[in-house]
Image (cartoon, rainbow, N blue to C red):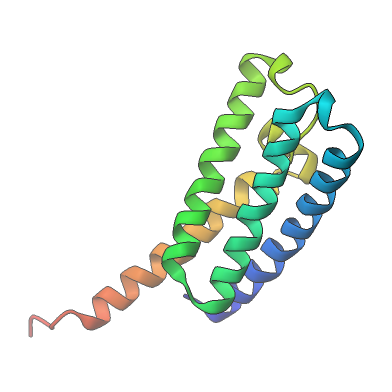
Length: 133
């Protein structure tokens, strides 16, 4: 993976993980009974972001790839469910509105991460395959 992209992704995932963890903590401690599913999704998103940040930091590309895929599916499912039936989310999560409350970063970030992770895998595969010359 491109080292600059890796560092940028680590920073962004770390910030988003801390923001989501803070949000989820406040939501769960102060008003969990009002929207338990939404607040659990916020906590889950925080865990996913932190796992991805750590995986990128440690060089665990497979974990980062799986985590980014889970993140993308989560954002798409939660965002779509919110459009189909807004009563499913009585309060905001990081992923409601496809991450619109966070400037759509939750929607765009996994796409960027998957691009760089898969591009890095392709590059390594091309370098390790025998040449046809």
